Length: 416
Image (cartoon, rainbow, N blue to C red; front, side, top):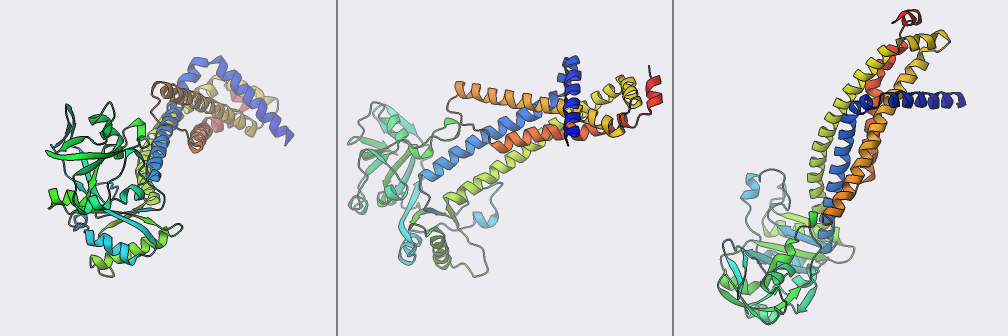
């Protein structure tokens, strides 16, 4: 074991001496490896930071929350014909869940009011295409909303269809840049509303983007139905009792299948999501992006590997007499094979290490310039990049090393 270790160390030293003697050629050889590693680490870091931002946003609503809608929450590719033909969820569906699902603690249905080409106005301040939702008062608890000023509207205001509104953080900032919006009147689609409360800022989106929840205008459900009676495409937010989320999901599915008359052997014609399922759906998108990234990095590794093979073949030819001399003094085929294989692996490993160092430095620099850009390098990306660079040296260095090991010592010594 000690002899093998000593031989390996000696081979590494010889490989480093060779690389130092041909620095520029060595750098050009590992350029493909360097680019492949740089690509893997930077893309994986940005995607990992992007994912963590999404996870933080989803979990901010609560890990016991359950969301129900007729369409998928995230969809790769176009919607199927069955999805497009699904009928909307009704208010009665939400109340059926509340009546028949003992594992559900809160149920809060709502509607998203279309405001395309509409405006919210306060004096000279305007918001184009405001995102207006009609919800019930318990939405403040189900969605874990925190009031910054004022209050949420009451059940009495909802039942009497009072024109009041609660503003998300960004909506309040846009209409009342100097603060003090509570008690003021605003116009939404030409109708007057009194602002009764404003909400605290939610966690920012990926790359420091605005959280869409901060742009909301939350009004009483029945007020919205009074102004927009044709709007009937409901979403349902529910909260399970502690530790009963799986049971609650099963109960909700059973109730909605009965409500919507889904036959026993048919798939659900609605979607049920939780924080975990939403994150899992997003992970599918991340995985698809990573697959493309791995493909591109593999191309970089392949290009680098071909360069390594060519340079190693040139190195074998240049050092033919050296190989013959080593064999003449007792070196075995496996000693020569190990020497050139270690040299190829050292060459690629150095390229991989350079890629890792430059990638980490680049991410730190970008973090200083763009502090809102989330990035965190996962350990698997570092391991994959490093192992990939070493594997390229092993794979593409095998043929030159084998060719060197098979040289006839007498012919090698005659080589000029």
